[in-house]
Length: 392
Image (tube, rainbow, N blue to C red; front, side, top):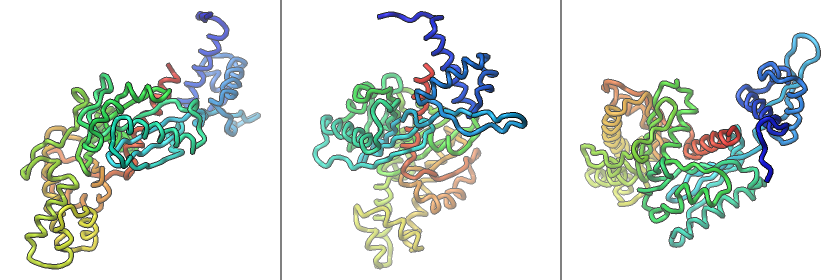
């Protein structure tokens, strides 16, 4: 095989195209004259490079510059549809996957239920592969157009080697399938794996417009609990990726996950309903073991006194947890996410009064992306990886 050496025409052309493309990506729409001035390359060299980049689909012409005199120059911009990335949230009951262009805009999205039969590594790997291939087929996007992928994993992801541990119960036994090494083998593109709550935190931080010096804690509560911490715009992972594992934090009523998870809220409702002196329908419904937690929130929105009392007690525990966490981490902002985030209009006002006495009180907010937080964070991470590969 003939090896290209520095200084050959093809190498120089590639370097020129890289320099111009990098400027367009970073600087937005520009004229050929602008690019010539910025890069120091001659106008014919810039025009030739632009023609080749257009031919490859990496840039496109878009409108005219607002010249004050003379003929208005044609602008060129990066074509975000030149390649696509994949972002996925691996969950205990479903898989959320999305294809996004290079601007991070989600173009295709699916939420798929987990296989009903016994979940072995082989079954789950087939499910992942078929789900991704199905999304690509439905979108009409070829594998050659896919440039990077990122997966949000509900467990501890070691940043050193991408190994997975402490998966949520429904996925235990699938650690090997979800390792970065295996996912990279299944997909013909660079792959990033990350804790799911970390990706949700990243999505919230990016969309919030926070200052670079600020910090954000994403407090996810649903079937399980977890925290994602962003410091100076970067995910803080801790030793072995174990940062944010809040489940074992002890509160006055017991282990954090036991009392604040969806199941913990149901148990609280069950106890308080049985102690309730009234014999109404609401007390009966809330006293049923394993009843839907959504029933509690529905009753709160109706103003039902028992449900309101249950949420007041729950908020006492939630505020205690936030206070303990903030004493150690002192984040600028705490975002409530997971299933809890969808009830922010109920919780935030109640929590504000309860945490007002904190020495360093954070701003409280609810998730702004609903159940897409993790997928959006995954897409953002995949796009960054794809650009990094293009610039490498």
